[in-house]
Amino acid sequence: MRNAIVGAGFAGLSSAKVLTAFGHDVTVYEKAPDVGGVWSASRRYPGLTTQNDKGTYSLSDFPMPRHYPEWPSGQQVQEYLEAYARHFGIRDNVRTSTEVLSAEPRPGGGWTITTTAGTSPGTDQVDHLVVANGIFSEPFLPALPGTDEFRAAGGRYCPPSEFTDLADAQGRDVVVIGYGKSACDVAVALNEVSASTTVVARELLWKMPRKIGGALNYKYLLLTRLGEGLFRYAHLAGFEKFLHGPGKGVRNGMMGSLQGQIVRQLKLRKLGLVPDGSLEDIARSTVSLATEGFYEAVTDGSIAVHRDTLVAGLGARDGRPVAVLADGTEIPADVVVAATGFHQRVPFLPQDVRDRLVDERGNFELYRQIHPHTVEDLSFCGYNSSFLSPLSAEVAALWIATQLAGGITLPPLAQRRSFVQERLRWMEERTEGKHARGTNIIPFSLHNIDEMLSDLGTGIGRRRRVTEWLLPVDPGAYRRVTRELMARHAATPRPETAPLRAAG
Image (cartoon, rainbow, N blue to C red; front, side):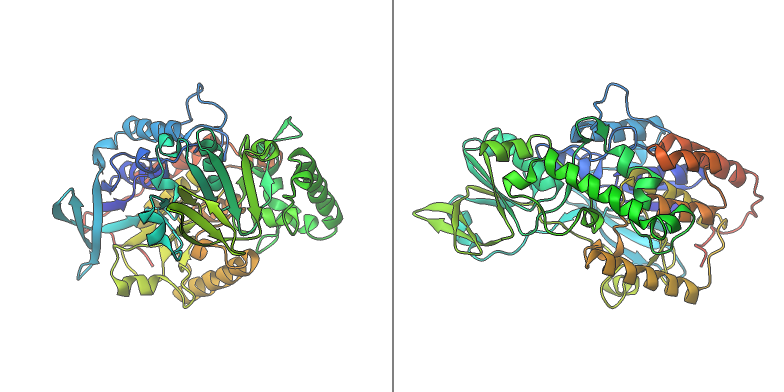
């Protein structure tokens, strides 16, 4: 089959590698000038690093280089993905600086892909389309009153992905909106050169230090099955039934002790930055790692934090740009960086197709975060954002390839609809609506991976699963899955007929 893949980040490149290995013809369209997705040089803000250590933030059959630091920089991740594409011989399948303008279903199946490279549009006909454009591809920039006046006075208002040159903050007053990892990362980076740095946080989030007590790497707490099991999943099984049943007191004690350690270690009470609620809220929508140097800069006064408020507008005072808080306070602001989240959109699909992909609340209705109910020849990869996003995307790519080969027996449509709707209601309630339209599965990375592997009729073995209860996930342990599925695929007789349509 001819496959088109939109996006050349972790999801797009792993899909290209897997589908090529399964014998398909693949073209990847990437509007940036390089591979990498969110790690592209074209959108890499100062201070960008991974949340995961290099051992867990990699694809199963291509570990990150040994010389990389424990938490690689954005540039290093992009270089890793470039090396991955070249190593597996798929780099020539990637058309960079090529935006997909539209993808139209063809009568009888497949898609017509219209793209532009520079000012030159072109079309391609494909049998199957994989959407891997990423759920963090289009930043959300709040429409603030006074923006025109602010910009006329020389102010700059943009998301982090559009602020890629540290020199642009030299000697300027900087305001960062938000309190997630990207907000704190960019605040620390710009604070090195700015005249002043202010963070405005509508809501404080719990943050996890990279090393608890300066010694225990957080990966031993959150990137294990035990760490994931501390949070209540939609359906409990095995030891999780104990943790949220008879052993709930032990589980609550662990969470309480960890919360107390974080408050002490980051000096949150002294700084007046203890979030509302409890540490359990850390997994409500995403987990944010504490940026090195952030709380130290708050302590020494070089970064100011306005908590539980928001930037209500922008403007100018005496010819200088300012940000205006909800209580009327005006803050000098030559640069305002809004780290305020992302849209989850597929703008290249026709409106009638988009309408069939979502429910009445706008949530993506995707079985296993991959398979739409009623749109043929279409799959999504990377719409299961998790602690282990590279591995989650890779297993999703294996699911897609196996399903195209007829190797997955899907439940009936009515059963799939019921399952997805139940799961979406649970996600929405658990996160108070902060579930990225049903695409953010944090903190249940391994549950999602296990469910996909169950559909594939494979896994990593009981011994390895037991190991993952206490030790961080090793993506390399999942190489056997790819080998097993490839061997199964090679041994399956195939009639010489027309291209196989997507099942279900």
